[in-house]
Image 1 (cartoon, helix red, strand yellow):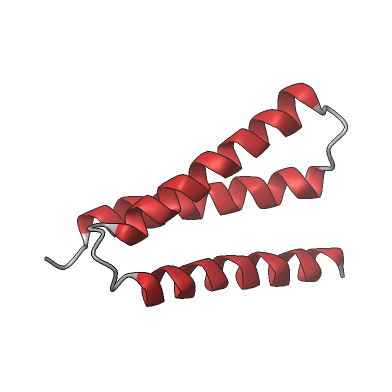
Image 2: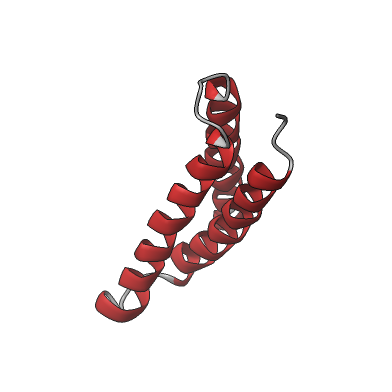
Length: 86
């Protein structure tokens, strides 16, 4: 049951970020989706660093979710830059 809850939280968070970034993509900033997900990837990377080196008592489930979210946001950032319509 924990895994199902973790999956639901992950899907909800990623989908919310993606939908909001695509809605706001009409602003005059070029590559807005790429920059948004790059910023989120950086924040998640800092959180992973904190969990591994400062707070060593973090749960395994938290680390797994951080790994998956960081992986997906980094690839979404790359494709946000590569597939941007001009």
